[in-house]
Length: 379
Image (cartoon, rainbow, N blue to C red; front, side, top):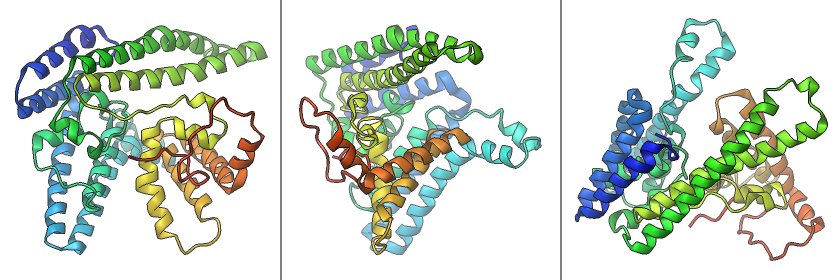
């Protein structure tokens, strides 16, 4: 069920909001949110519903086990549990998203490869898997206690506004709002406005540009002149941003109507003055996730290395980012391409680019990791 669909706008969302506002107790509100999220998922991917429910239960129990072991001082056992939990989540993602690519690289005629090619990935698997990993690490590092209320945990884990395309959200970011949602007329109105803005971006702008992009990219490239080729590229550049940011607008708007503040995902990325600056502004929740759970641990683990540590860590992070985006060699090459550019910028290229760039109307904010990894500061 897509956000811009008739069923969602005129049936699913109004009923969900009405029940959510009318029911008085927190447990009832969480029950409505969980039920609505399961219906939202099942509408598009009913056959994979057991995978989602299994992931919820597995990570809920793993978090409680982790917390119990840490309270008892059994750090070695907790370390085993955290790595088994993370490995299980990555394995789930790998089986559905990357195993067909691997088998196809070995032998595309394998029967197993042909069988797996017909298996569709569960809806939003990349997003709820990363949410699960962040939750387990946060519990392990005592950034937050394990959530022992299954309804609350499920409401966070499969919350339908962020389930399909994010933003990737840590429990710490929404826990207080889940427990005490701010249900006011102002939040309802501002959330509706944000949703309508995103809806307009998607339906009026992005979908219109998609028609242009399809005609240019599917045309005979030998007959396309430079002017039409550039027209298609510019249209695609705008379409991919408007499409993705529109979804974020709608997700944040729905969250606000539910009294829950979801993190922002875009901050005018096309005004960036360098590639590093771009990645501080584009898909910010993903960049923040990789900074917190990959880049910083790599920096700590390799802190004794004096040469090329930061640059190589940045390359590793963005290679993984490319792999996360899609199961194809194009995405791997894309991640390596950005990894090389960002590593060069971290070695001094970004500062040189910004010094030679035209001055901006207002100074841009740079966080403490400027020159290391293109990220936003995690709250």
